[in-house]
Amino acid sequence: MSDREMISCEQAVERVYEFLDGELDAETMEQVREHIEVCKRCYPYFNFERIFLDHIRSKGLRSERSERLEARIRDALSDL
Amino acid sequence: MTDRDDVGQEREKKAEFEAEALVHVDSLYGLALRLTGGDASRAEDLVQEALLKAYRAWEDFQLGTNCRAWLMTILRNTFINDFRRQQRRPQTVDFEDVADRSVFAEVKDLDPAGEFFDRIIGEEVINAIDELPDEFRIAVVLSDLEGLSYQEVAEIMEIPVGTVKSRLFRARKRLQGRLYAYAREMGYIS
Image (cartoon, rainbow over all chains, first blue to last red; front, side, top):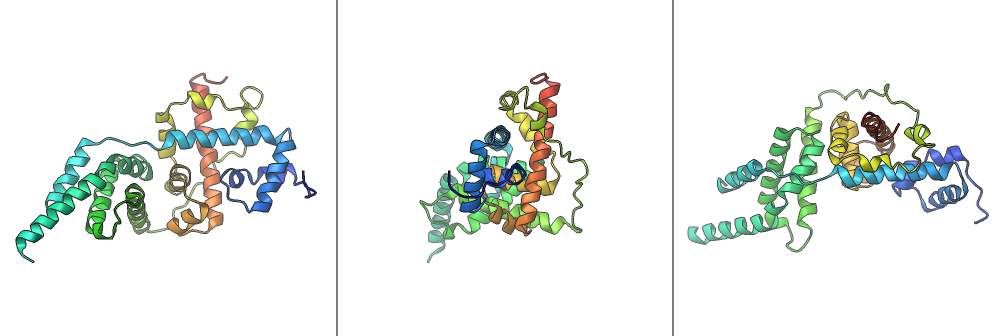
């Protein structure tokens, strides 16, 4: 661990999504990482939120088949 | 150039467009459905509008680059422009029902690794996303489903990055709360 000052649980928790989204600057990213590595309370929370986001991301977007739509678009194209 | 050349060229363009672009219609429709909150008729219109725009701009598309990404961007921009136009007044997003109580606090002793999420079917996740208020849903779709950065979402939605953050935060908490309630109802967690 570096000699960087440790951030508090509160400071870590309020950055949870920015951390998981990779939206913090390198310095803050590292501070949060160092905190959750050693914090018994924060680590499970961050882990839970990460699992939740993975879940949304993997199940939220899917292709949808619509025969009607494809036929409609082919019609529209042939009118051009 | 003769008319016959024009016809031949047009036919060639159409064939190329069908092979390169039309094959992505299912992905486009999937994205359109999530952006519109599951409104099939709006989503179909949106895909058609985006694909016709793409066809008109087909000369600008470089073959060999990512056609799907190009089409997704056109669709997204088309949706956002319509969305903005339809918004006569700024939408008042209801912030009241967002419980601060984290789902994690509820499950940390029983299921700290959120195993109940694995049992929730995709359909339920999609319903939960579709039910979010427009402003929240769009932020989640762009960020979580399309993987755009906060800055990109801010530019597309024409809102400050701070607003993207707070919308994402609230939207995700809502989704989490809804999925947790569903998991309890189904007995995936007691």
